[in-house]
Image (tube, rainbow over the protein chains, first blue to last red):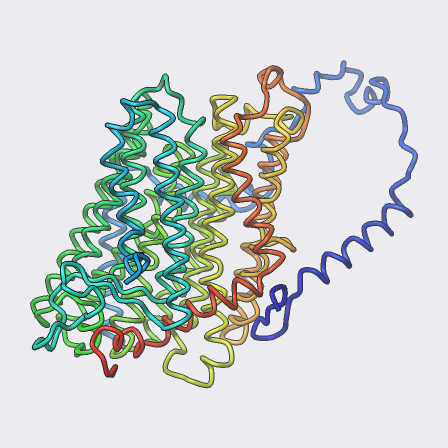
Length: 111
Length: 522
């Protein structure tokens, strides 16, 4: 069958999945998708901004550099290490290449 | 004799001829030049399909250059092959199909993406076709030295294309870095081929495989070949050139460069399975690929998470996705000498890894093209300077969603199908490897959510106010890849049954590869 694959432990049929997904999506939309939303007003934002005027929408968008700040902060040690490895200097690229070559050869001889 | 008998050579002959004819065609009209470039690659796809059909009917196809008969690998009186030949099995044809589709889409996309006023378009199209010829040649040849020649053709054309926008110093720097590491790698490949030639007086891969005896010279040749090709494929920790080259090349070139790197990955698999698989310790070789795969997956995705340049981010994801292929095929190689494990899960892991090659070529190609579409309108790759593009570039947004969902392994797209096969089969080999692969998928999704939020969602920033959708040829180029992502996702059984499954089986079956040239097999 063109849609069906076995994976070594189970199987996958995307058409069944798609049909199930559509049924669940229609169900969810009918029961939870018609929520009445509160009207937007800049005044409602003021308590959260300590009385300051609301910034423009463009200024409020979280920029790419700040997304996952917590993740990168928690992993800062790891990223410092990666930063040391990724110098952008061509000599280092060649050193890494040669180092892997030597390590692989030693491992191959031992194995 | 039907002309289709010569389909193997026509796969590369058409784009090669057109690449040299481009300066002449350009004098007629730029549309003639562009149409010829597209037509030559469409013709290549057609020829690949003809060869694929022949392989399904009668097994691997051998095509000998310069002989009275193109189908006699051993001339009368000879015990070993002396001529250059193409040896095309399911794996070669699979790679050629994937690469030729990516290259065709790249040229269609270039039609509008590379503006006439930028100049040098004749050289651009010539180099693009030469790069495609190099890639296809690497995937079709059965001759080790010929493989090196095609590797160099693809590499040298790539250097020129990466630095195409030479007014951008970063492009020139990226090309220079790629040239240095690539040339050193190519020299090692040449030295390794020289060692093997010295030992066996032959350059034919099947002949070398049949007579291989693992001594110190062969071990040195093996390490030189494997590590150099792994570097060319972008495996960590030799991946640094990837983010530079992919990040600065024009998007249409980057989309095809993904497939060019995969041609080196193909070379790596061919060396490990077909040339050395008969004699070497496959468990060691398999674990070598698995370790490269794990490092590539994890370091690639974590580096991508912190990028703000959309193309560098995607380049690191390309490294990460190569890890899945190395993992799947590595598990197959590690259990190659264990028939029970190979049948139980090894072949499935390899099928998943090989299926992922084509999926990756399509969705990663698509994602690079969407990044190019954004650059075409905004002239920036910086995600911090984007926002609200979904309002203005509806097709690009839809294509990006398809590509991002596919790379993150969301059902029902193609990336999910291949990743699922890898997870479930690799789990039987070592559950921890599957866990790492799934964590990497989650991080991939997180990374593309970031891109989607930064570039397409949010308020319409001032820079985006006058932006509109990209020209039609770019929309068509992206559309072709998006449709393939969806179709391969909805009909994975078709791809596994007719393409990826037979490709995995042909890698495992050394005997068929050798006997199609030498006769008599092992």
